[in-house]
Image 1: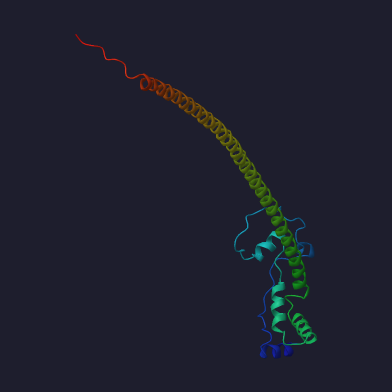
Image 2: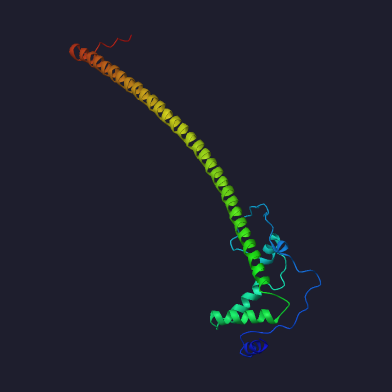
Length: 222
């Protein structure tokens, strides 16, 4: 096995890790590796223009994922480093590394991966709940804005209608007053014209008497 690992290391496909003493504490049990079943209550936060980078460590810590002797990310890097191999050879090489290193077993990264998959699912559900809460709050605010708009615009339109009615009444009243004034002026003009015509006719009649009978005698002076 060590010969195969040495060959893989020389080929640049894997990198042998220095032996690491296992931590003094007891190896975590499957129950300890299981993530917490209850997620934190969702908290609606304002949406940002640019999403912040996802803090995976915080996500795993919130879900209660315990540290692993051989994290799943390390196995992913190993698989990626052996991507030039076919699947069967790659699997055999990883099993050989597992057998040669007693500080970890393949169950360690697999259990870590399962716990992190569940943690990511819980976090995804939390994101969905947060988004739904934000959508509800946003819709409520939008409905409030729309209701305020309808009320204000309705009040303005009512005031405009009342002002329009007032303007119509004032226009009608002014037109009636103007018509009355014009009628009174016309009546006065007609009456004055008739009186002037009568006076003119009477004056002509008086002048006709003078023409017919001569001018009146001028009184003599002593």
